[in-house]
Image (cartoon, rainbow, N blue to C red; front, top):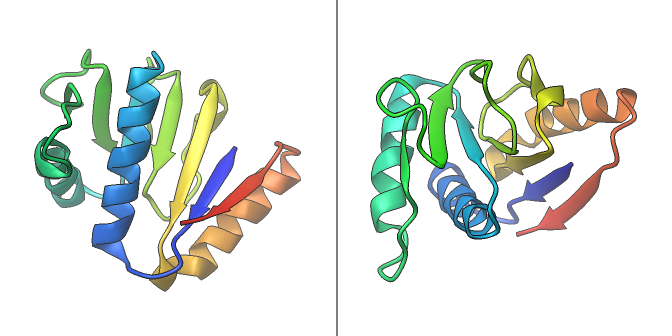
Length: 134
């Protein structure tokens, strides 16, 4: 369980960090689920994955359109068939988080209270926690 805490920036920077994490995980052979708070943010992240780095290509799709893509973007609770890496951009701990091999929580500067709450939830579940400043 890794928490990536942004030193500055908010929504846009959090999405860029999530894109970099997804790219690295996909290159390492993980199936990746990027979880957003809502459908609009999922579509924004979908667009950003095409353009966040000029030299990058991350095969991805929205869960409603391409649930079998190596990198899937969904909102709300993760799909039942999920495993691999969950990159959470939502404000809560999703139901079914325990199904994933790894979890990366991206904590925006403007949402640190929600990040602290998620940290407490995982700590109460006795999951090993690591924090990274980004």
